[in-house]
Length: 320
Image (tube, rainbow, N blue to C red):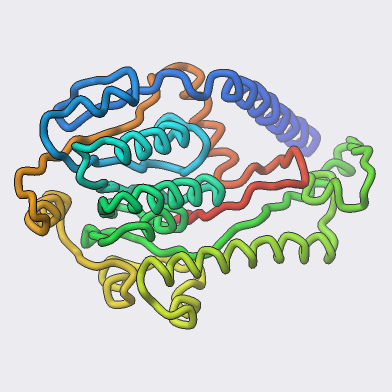
């Protein structure tokens, strides 16, 4: 009975690795396919440049949905950056309203979007954010570029912190079932955080230093964006999530209201009352591969469990 369970576990383990390799290869080759861009009236465009074809001044609503990564069925980094850049150069565009419903994601991707929004604001245009059910960690990081942040009364936000690594040491399991895994390396820490190598104290310290550096960057961005003192942000930034009321009391957001109320408030606060909204969403076409990809994400999210290299990704992620 024990041998049967062990074989079953090994079989599942092998299937997961195989699926991950197949999906990773597919994403590398086809990750930017099947992109849709939609405006508020649900008119579909095939190219980013066509977003400029508007006869009225408008605020662009950009949806940031799901895990912030290079590409998924609800989020695409290249698409987000291209939309922001297109709106920046469009004379009819009056501002950006981000609708954020995300647990966070990669530090690299979140910071790229944040910097793109900061660059966008150099034109004199404004950025607003509205938080849906969850706007945590990397989602909050991006929102710090906003001139004003609105949230739903049931929003969960915050989670100001960093995950720099996740190690699964299965050396004892492999030994138990008679499998020996050997990785040939040059450099004593090259195999760090691989599943066939225990984590040493030195390696733990290496990843902690990386996390600390990114954490300090996050804290400084929050302090700048919310006009708070660093020491006050450090008290709030212990990785916990906050309710909308808690976030408001701690000055992490500006106002609690509904989505429709936020849109009205933004327009009435501007000199040009004839502004309209144009909405932009990314949605990958459904396919068997995207379905498998979703299952794989659930299995390995939020971290890449089987790290391919020592340069592991950093995550701004909340599991709540």
